[in-house]
Amino acid sequence: MKLTFAEHLREFRAEKKMSLRELAELLGVSHTLIGLIETNKRKASNKFIRKFAKYSGKDPKLLEFIANPMPLSYKQSIYESEGAPNFLKENWAQETIDGKDHIDELLLSLFREVEFRNMPEDLIYYRRLISSLESMTDRPIVECWGKFYNAFLMEKEVGPELSLRAFQDLYARLVNEPSLQDTLYLRLQTCFKMGQMNQKLEAFEEAIQYFLQARKISDQLKDSESLAMSYYLTGNAYQSNRDRETAIQNFLEGLSIDGPHQHLRAKLLLSLGVLYRELGRFSEAVDRMKDAVKLWKLKAVNDSLSLAQTHQEMSATYYQEGINYEAALDYVHRSLIIFTRLEQESSSSIAKMGVVKSKLLKSAIFVNSNQLERATHNLTAIIQDYHQLTSIDLSEANNIMREAHELLGVVYEKGKHWVKAEESYRRIVHYPSTSEGGSLHGRLRVFINLHNLYEKKNNKADAISMLMQADALVGNFDHSNFALLASVIELRLLQGNVAFSQGSTQEGVKYHLEACELSRNCDTTHLLRKSLKSIRDQVQTLNTNGNEIFALALYNTTTSWVKKHGLENLAVDIQSCKDLFDQI
Image 1 (cartoon, rainbow, N blue to C red):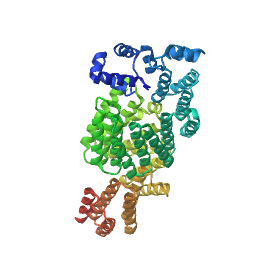
Image 2 (cartoon, helix red, strand yellow):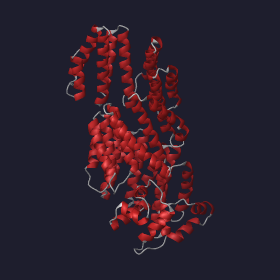
Image 3 (tube, rainbow, N blue to C red):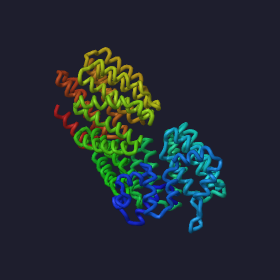
């Protein structure tokens, strides 16, 4: 059953064995436009629909209704006329040659549109639309699809808790009601949604169980694409639960499934790449992301939005590795070009957010390469966009603002504009996170940045005060919060440096080893490598300043710890850190 206009378009191309460019030439439009419509990234205009209907021989009224369920005439008829459902049914629920009617296809295509339109005014419209469409037929399956998308809307309006309950009630009905025993596809989609709602609630074990149930249903349906999707979602849940090895296994299992679902294969490759980056396996991360790029560019996929997102992730990978900033700039520039074009063509909120995130990443690269004027220009523009971003996603807008103000503070600090730097750092807490861990991390970043600032100003008392407040803040922090963990490790290293400056060798060594232990226990070489490099720098500083005894104590303790845990051969970069210690 074809539920969307995009599927009608793809079916026609497959039937005629036409490429995107060939169909574009036939219809007199760009191949990029067709690619966007086929991937549901852009709505087809009535003019485009009429052209396609002419060449495909399909019913233009049906296509128009499927492709665009919100033209004013239909909206008014549904809002204002009690006879609207009958009007729709009389006009489009006509018998076809095989004896079936279009009513299911019409209803489900309209319901499917809900997933692509999430502005508040759209949600109000769809609430009324679903209610009206349910009255067009007494089929239980249509009523159940209505409940499915009502639950979907509920998550957008009030959050995942009530939405999860609605999906659970629907699933119980699908399983227990005799007339609905053949609704495997709807059960599958409901399992996916129940898993996703649990994941949003951070109930990861429950989410995994629903995704595993979806896997069983996919096997029953012999649906390879849904099976691959179940592995993809299960992998994401394990990744969120910090079980990276099991996440990798699921992503690899998903990739091993045969089928034409290249779009999903690309998503699996990208997720695998991001996971490898988290583990500090940067070269593998880049390789998987490059594989994903090849698939996004295929004619059968042609997903410009995902291509831009992958370029953005590749840039972030090079940036985090901290070796090839030129490559990081190249890929973030590619992502910006695509995001900007998509925003101009379709006014997409996703593309708008992509533009801002790429500009933020570009600013971070500028800061690290000391291109301070360019960084300031970008960051100021991002901060001025705040109110527009809040209309898209308040939580994401606040995340962006916290990072932008921290980067701007670093810029001012490098330029010795101390007052402006302090103001920027303190503004981080003006943008609260929706999670307790996120709010804690925001406050911790303020204290760490102010400590570094006061150290540069030689304001020792205030610098130490900031570390004491930061230490009191973290207490028994959640080790599963990766971003918070990285900042706590940074805090311990700074506390170690201060202890050495105060003449306390034992305290200095203790804090540095605690940073190493935290890094080792987080299953990623990236943070451990940063900790060892920081310790290497501190050993060199102590030695240069004439504190050879402190330097030797830290060096001997660290190298003993490295040998004790067998980390010499963990990675080439860690081995190089050991070599640097040996030179002292």
